[in-house]
Amino acid sequence: MSLSSENAPYDVVAGLVSKARAAQIEYAKYTQEQVDEVVTAVAWTIFEGDNNSRLSKQAVADTGLGRVEDKELKNYRKTLGLLRDLKHAKSVGVIAEYPEKGLIEIARPVGVVAAVVPSTNPVATPYNKVINSLKGGNAVILAPSPKGASVADEVVALMRRALVSVGAPVDLVQKLPSPVSKEVTGELMKQADLVVVTGSQNNVKSALTSGTPAIGVGAGNVPSLVDETADLNEAASKILASKSFDNATSCSSENSLIAVDHIYEDLISVLQKKGAIRLSEEQKELIRKLMWPNGKLSSDVTAKSAKEILSLANIPHDESVRVILVEDDEINSANKFCDEKLSPVLTVFKATDFSDACKKVESILNINGAGHSVSLHTQMLDRATEMGLSLPVCRVIVNQAHCFATGGSFENGLPFSLSMGCGTWGGNNISDNMNYRHYLNTTRISTSIAPNEPELKEIFGDYWKAHNITV
Image 1 (spheres, helix red, strand yellow):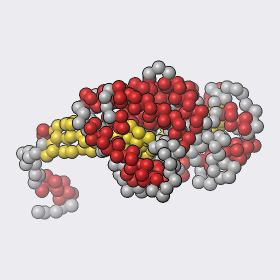
Image 2 (cartoon, rainbow, N blue to C red):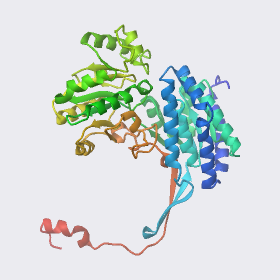
Image 3 (cartoon, rainbow, N blue to C red):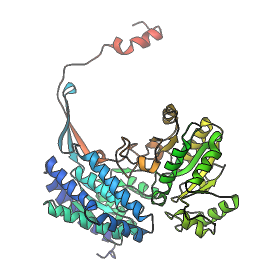
Image 4 (cartoon, rainbow, N blue to C red):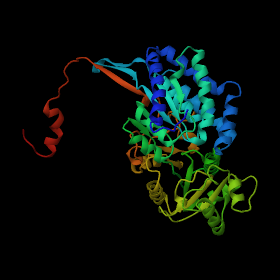
């Protein structure tokens, strides 16, 4: 479809939205059982045959980001976990009744969802957003990154065939035509009923200023804190597994490691034994020049393996290396090692004690990443509560591999998601993991109940007494 005319972006999007609305109107008549069948049919396409393997290979080939085997695992676990969360969830008709309050809650679709997808997860994120959209009775139009547009075509083709197989309207799932541009994506944001956006902060800002209700997520830049009580072998294994997974494409990958002085050298030693390389100051500067040649993170290192990065920097290394350790003591916005690196490069800071470590964590988050999450490795679990009460984060992940845990895990209770809300700290209007509830409108029916009006004394009695007020 040509985009040459001045009105082309509007016309292209209007055509897609018109078809989506017609499909959604029909879909809105479905029962919960019918909706769940549609969700299951679409979800099955990632598990069926060699689809996951094929799409994962194509995703890495098209984007140049990540590792095929990790993409496969991510697609599998994230989709299976989401289906577990949705298995018994009510999203059609009456979903809750509270007789004591005289309230009935009814789930209603939002309509047409514009789903903006990052190049880092061109398969897992579309499945997550499409499944959540369909669970809510909505139609969805994908806006992939240009790098991920080709594999998105394959994903959408699979999903549309699944819709046909269960007799559902095929235009419930569509995508923007290639080549995908900022102009057409922006127009989709304007014409949809809801925008759900994952990816760059520029995309998030565009969505939030589009005039359409939008749910965006904040930037990663996750710090991990290891205190003096931590099991160092366990902590090191989890940190390395998380940081090296999919070459750190996840916004939930650790970018900084803060270790208290008492265990600092021991932790570094364990990390080295398990596959980390500790750089000298000279090697650190080689990495700095490679990663930020013009002040911006180079695509040469983004989502590349530790071995590839070290080879590009001409730094000798063992073939078993998984993560690059860069030690630093300056926490400020001018120091790029304090920021998100989208690569298996982990900046390590030393803290005098737990209190000092928390201060360093907060400083790092405030550079870029406020609201997202922090990782804690400890045997003093009350410290997690202390961090949750004081740090600007929406999640404190305790004794877990961070990138696996933050977006939901079979070993924790967080909803499975690839989009983490960061609250007002991160400029977001949600602070939880984006899930199916965010794809719903809720209608509430209110009926009369027995009066429940308190006396003034019941409300103000303690206050009057404390301040010697006589009424």
